[in-house]
Image (cartoon, rainbow, N blue to C red; front, side, top):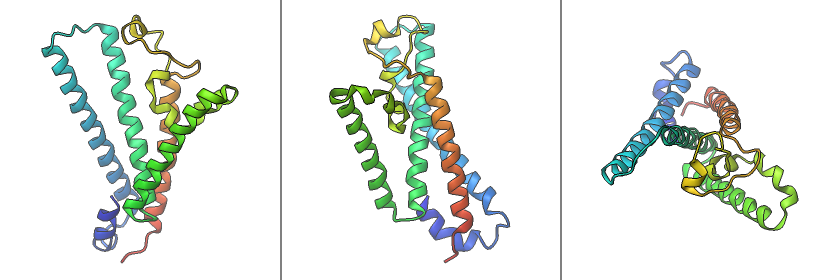
Length: 186
């Protein structure tokens, strides 16, 4: 998005009376592309599973929907972080910073899990912790844990993760629009 903004800003910003609506349309386009990517990816995975003879029940569909929604929202959150950083610095550096922060967050999560369990409730507030569905409580959906054999951490629930990430997306989108409105034309 940074290259698009930097290349086309001088042509678009002088002809567009409202940069805010233009920015929002670009964010909607990014979200739509993210959803379509995961929709096709998950449908292809489902198709391969069906071809291989996997049987699917209603709880499987419910879990699949939760995984799809989580993938789309988590990826859009990460893309917003990268694109917001890219409006301030070069795209390569924004990727490096975003993925370094994710790596640091995942690493610190593992270290806290292994060596400092007293700080475990803090992990719920790290954005990357919301990306790990294996920590979420799917006990309301029958047989999920017995089929996949994963453990979950008390307090991690898909609803909390969605609310957390949607608030983050709102904050990042607002910052993105504000930054776009402050950009110089060059």
